[in-house]
Length: 123
Image (cartoon, rainbow, N blue to C red):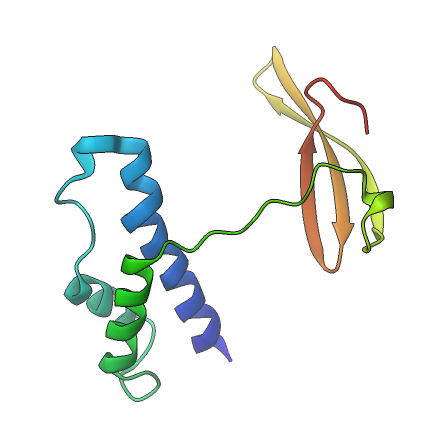
């Protein structure tokens, strides 16, 4: 149900705070990482203790703190060479103000949308 999605989002946000933000901010990030108490308090705003006990949240916090959640990127090959075939694909043009626009090859496959930059290579 919703609590599974809410915990998943909370873990992704925790991972971002503990690992990703620290890499981007650098040494200024020292002391800004969320504590386990803050994580539990924040999670309790959307999930009750009856649904997920503090012990589980603490264990998940420690697991994320110890090992960053990361995903290996898809190999840089055309979708036609992958075992998954797209439902639909095509160019997506985004506009940033009047002067700047960027082009991405958008692929919808397995109920997910993937975006590929056209920087230097046509699909």
